[in-house]
Image 1 (cartoon, rainbow, N blue to C red):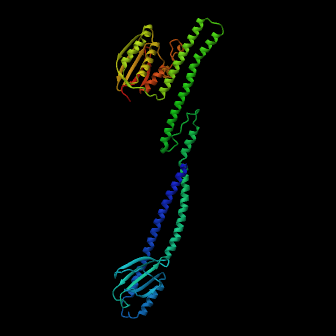
Image 2: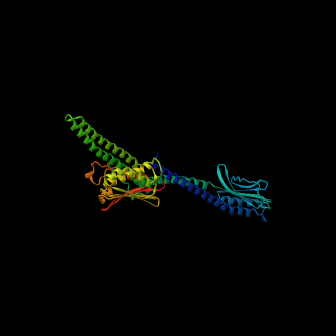
Image 3: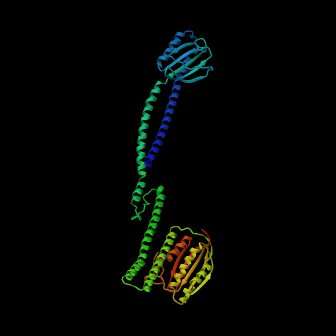
Length: 457
């Protein structure tokens, strides 16, 4: 495909050529008009002189003197020819071989004409005189001047003008090429910067301050695209490293346990215990993989499987029934107040609420209380789950929604520990619905607030 520099240079050259040729035509037309006016103005006094000369006088019968005077006029003006004819077109006098294109002439009216005669261009003027003249009758006087000197001048002038135009087009093309090359230098800079972007250097950005205004928006969009690519690549990298790190521990446990069990003969009950332990680790890995897949889909624009109006209080009560036994075991009291609705997928919202409630039960002191408050503010329904338990530090609050982040790493592998994906999944579900989840914690209680839209967005 033709380069942009070549296209713009050709376009610049074509525009320059069109302007210069148009200007040359205008100049040519103006000069020719000026020459025509000049010729007719020069002929007019000569015509008047001849008209006055042929007027009848007392010695008009002396046509010899009249012819001599006409010859003198013709001799003084070598470029001018004239002829005198009767009204019936019979020639009375001629100077040169003038062949004025005479038509029907109205007496007293001056005619102007341009014609070509034997390869020579002429301009002329003529007048018919019906009154008696020195020739004893009415006459037609025609006078003409050759334009050969003008033609020669125009040919020379046009050759020089065309030479100048060609040189001007070449010069303007060169200047246009230099201007386009200079003007496109920001694009070459963008190309150089873009070439430096790689998987290892996704933090490279195109400088906005060194590009012209016309392509600033394009550069800004490219930088935003690089931001999205870097974020996606970072998520993919973290996803791979996180899942490899989290799978390594249970796999290592199963391998060690299997190697130890095979080091000597075991009873059937011991083998059964080992298999049960391995099954528990496999179930944990399976749950982790399922959560990671769900999280990966949610973080990459997961579309809601369905959308309906959900009564949040009803769903919380159902979850209370589900977690009732676990709460009773720790003598935890569950309380619900307020009501509200949200628009979204029932299964996903249930999962988000379940994650927050199970997380609260896991970290609530025995005999304490979990309070769930549902409110509606504008187009958002807020579900706040507060529990009395160990406070979460401000540092942990910043990272608590990251994958596999655990505030208390000493409990990370306890029997009741989750996969570290519950809160990230809750945040992903909130974002998928156009909502948000936040945490606030102090020495008295820890509150998670899940906001969900009341209506579809």
